[in-house]
Image (cartoon, rainbow, N blue to C red; front, side):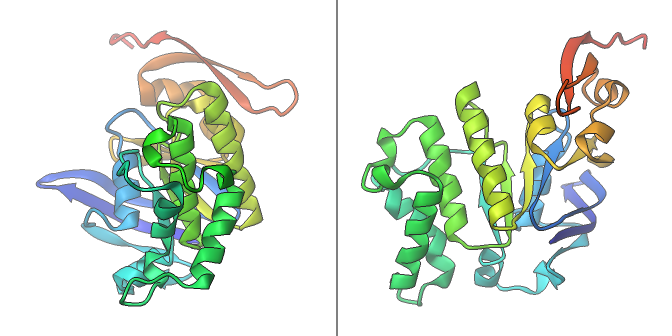
Length: 262
């Protein structure tokens, strides 16, 4: 389980996250939503340790991350970043093997156990046939699966994803999120994922955390958080919400920008 307790982050004199507290249980996907600049990426980076925190604590299965060494932290949580820039000289297998770095000896040599984990990650992400292919030869959706496979190879209980569906078409968006959902349940991962598309959030997330100006505005199920009033306030856009006829999941229809007079 991932627990974020009273987390605050400052950039210079500006506080960009203020007193954020939430939990992601094993087998659960928490979607981070909010307008641009709300703090989604900053929260992912703060949890991953790439930006310093001003106050608060982060725990994984009761262990305070601030007490862990860099290799220990890498064995505790894995990140699928927003950027897809990877060296074209690397093969798919080589990139996925990078996820095993924290487990290797100081000589940086992979063991048979490392190779076995990489093989499983390639199978889980349906990348076996691309094993020896250069990263430069892959499509955007395929590269995103490689980054997911690298994160899975880290063999961590927590997975962080920063807008993993950006620049993907509808087919690749749904395929990737279906895979993440499946692996979350099978491997009992605690997943924290920043997502822009609210309808994808409604369908794939177990819980939703809405950030507004660096604060946690709402936290709950998609039905609890994705209401017309909440979404209109957070995004300054009028929306109509219709429940899915079979699942009851909210479907969001934008109606236009909210008038400043409102």
